[in-house]
Length: 186
Image (tube, rainbow, N blue to C red):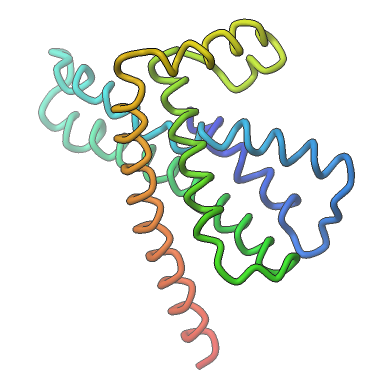
């Protein structure tokens, strides 16, 4: 999952650089970026595996403290950081290329899209590559998902969680970036 979380970040580097030109290849890259972006937010749901890992009788208390907990913290933070940096690169690109001043709607829209992708991945067990490998299953599941009893509640929880974490991580990233710039200029 961490590898899948890294894909949108890696794609954001060439896609949202100042020199990027919007041609057919760029638009194809944007579609792939959008399809894989939910994978970066998805890592937060892998916390469900933490409980079973901690309950494993073969793992000592020290193993839990010094291996399992740090492993999950690093995994979730790194994956979600890929989500945040990917969207920040997109927003910065749009600000520079299209002179957009306020891009909160883009941030919220991408987080909503990711919440839906996380829902499809966690509850319906869909993968990003089903667009190509199993498009019929993908379409049927997407249509059916709106009728499920847990859909709207899960979407609300995922959207609020992803969005709150996004803005916390964004603030930390921008604060650290500003601090780093001040430190370099002195």
